[in-house]
Length: 470
Image (cartoon, rainbow, N blue to C red; front, side, top):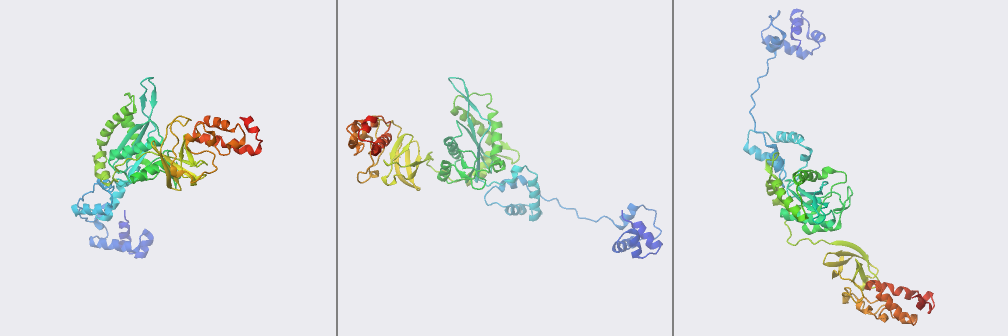
């Protein structure tokens, strides 16, 4: 309460100056002057009428007459959040559309303040605004479904792959036998085919099938995984190690998949991965078609509205899985892959090359350039059995070299003189000894490597010691 009664008494009854009243009441001279003016306008004089302090203050300081504010149209905050996920949509554009419909509504500054207050009240996952068609979050579930072995009845755990689109929360899931690179990439391809397009970015966890070096600043994607992304025109942005918020959509998607899929399958039995995936596909239709209370629409509806128009078109040619390996070209200008031998240009002897091999073909690359390609061989490379190792004519040197073993396997079949021009000079027993070494070898590459060794060691031994060594 103001000291109105005391100020009026000191002035009108005692006749004190404003400075003296200020010292006694602790009020400023300006406040005292304003109080006396208001008392005169209210028609008051000393002694004051029998009124209490509240009524006295109401006479001198009546409440301000404020205009009744019109009720303004409140923007739909959840709808604004959905619209901001579309490419190119800004808060300014949404305000212009809102103000065109409600001219008496909030101006732009207050519009942004209201949206910011609403956003702070939402869950932390809502703070990331995902643009339609931009990011696909992928991960494996920690809880795994199981299939039953028909013969033994044994329960075999399998993996559950989960992919979630950032803008619409559209979810894809499937069961795979392992988390290996081949299953990992095949799950991505089937996800793209289910969407009918490709997102601009894949956000995986730091598992070995997707990320070779899980560095916080410069992660290195697994080579075949990166090759698959280049094939489909997308990219890889691995989540930082120990930062689950980088892939919060995947974490929530995995949790929903566990509750919506695994919980409903707990009492069902499946005898193959195909049966399990058929049932998962049925549950996914229900999950994506279910209306979300926060957005007032289903995942499928948001996907059709936000994600599908902005996906990268899906290529008609499917990516063919391939693996990579480093190798060194031997003196017989062949490289080895799983105990099978393939020729390369002879100029690359002792050079480091890279092998890119699929189930059907094998490519040899040197400094990023392909130098040879062959059909992949699965036959046994034994003397007299199976075809000779793949050797192209243009890979052979222009004239005979001192390499002791020709590259073609048929040249080794029982003909010891073909093994090395220096074989007869080592002693009378050298030709049959060389033939035995060749026939004891399991492959042409092994034959070409086993025979020259003892022959080259003849410089340290007499001519009679080599036949005795056999």
